[in-house]
Image (cartoon, rainbow, N blue to C red; front, side, top):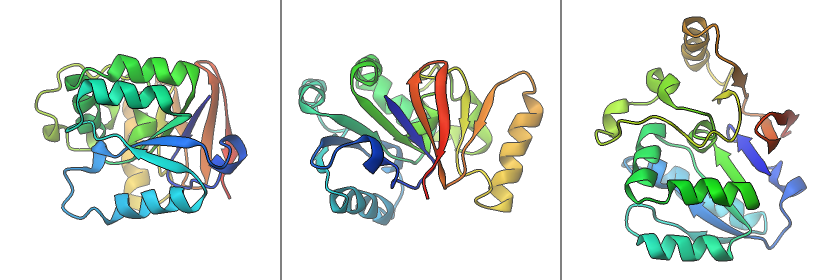
Length: 198
């Protein structure tokens, strides 16, 4: 199962048992000077009753990361810059293993972590700075669903206008709009539905 979010994590309680061991991947946010978001996000997951194991994609060895994957019930991939997230996963050569993990266990993607579940992330170039990932030339993503996630829809006028512009430029593309009070529950690439996270 895959759970794709904009931001509200309360829905996890319905699908992920308390005391589950969750690998936390926060690399998408590591270029930010202020890490309060990541600190608060980790605390919220711990307060919900989950056992967190940090997976530092940039500094952990590939072997250590894969060993951690083996003992986890779920992986939580945070928000941040989609391009940087994909670049670091591919550089560390754990991208395919993350896809394999998602096929067997629970993958939770929030914001950027949700967008990389799409077939490609090229469409988010008006939302995230592509220059933060100068080593990334292939924007192919996890392809866990047959649509393209637009997170935080209606969270602000500016963000919604940007996402509306993405849809207008790509009329033949299947987009999935998620507000901050919605999540996408994915059973299979073409089998998913939106639920309220309130």
